[in-house]
Length: 440
Image (cartoon, rainbow, N blue to C red; front, side):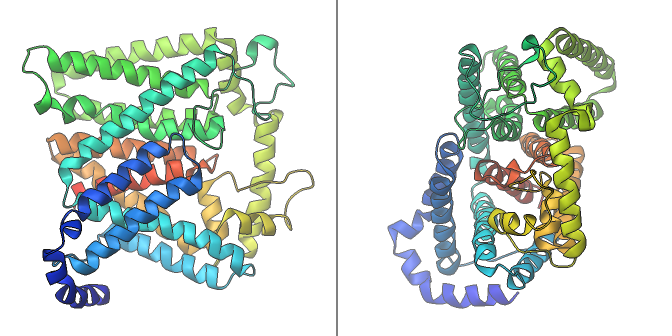
């Protein structure tokens, strides 16, 4: 690769400086610190503040690449699809009729991809930090869960119209929690919880060697983790985010399928019985809780629900946008999208996005960018599945947790675009980076 030849030349120049610099010797520590700050700041900071920490981590990684001898880029098959996606994004931006606005969106995309490269290059030399990353996500999930329960108990008021109450009785109106994620929105909060809850499942196994060697320590920790996961799932349910419900369903479906396949034959019958019991219990809770029942059933109300109807109108307009710009799209970014969308929208149905991340990608960057991005996702998931079914180590649990998180995010993205918020984007790229490093 041409870039590796360039890195080789710069490293020959800067290696003596690297070898004699205490700061450069500890640059991985600084990169890791900023990755963890990105994780924790996502629970309370605004988008720009989170982005600054990510950019600093990217800058430090660039310095590491040009100074540390032996550093180079290696493209996996999935990375090649991502590169294809990025090439068409660049072409789309160059041809955009609103170049300035499109460039702003492009720099956000560049930041996210740069952060992915940062995570990969950090973790390949620091695989022992993966369990601490999952712990960080787990702590964030527990913190947000506590906050969500407090909001629910306090019956927090809506900041804007978050549910169609025109056909609801008072007992069917849900108090929709939104945590501490900014900007406050239950859909964003639901998407964030969807992305971090799977991290909890890996913790009892990640820190097995750190536990006291009592006979029942790990089973007790597994029970505690499952309890915390149950509370976190409850917090997600309290968001009233139907897209997150869809994502949670797919996470649960894939997780139970994989666990069933991995279990010994004598345990599969017990697992099936537990699964049936859990399904009946969840069904009973849904049926007996008026607000939750109304919220879930509204998913299938089609045009009868105003939120559904709004999305259908947006989809129709965005499909027309795609038809007119199918090859290279209109350019990057939500501001660019809003300007062009105004030419296609139905009166009274203004939108910030396409409410579907795949349609959004196609509209912004064209059909080939969409194919590149989807191929990147599918390739990573296939690699993860192969690794899970062929390896029996702690890394298997990490890959499983990361894959479940990604599947949940992608399923949620069918009906919403909170994926493009940094809190979820950076989590997504960290999870992808974990799969990339461990399934190499």
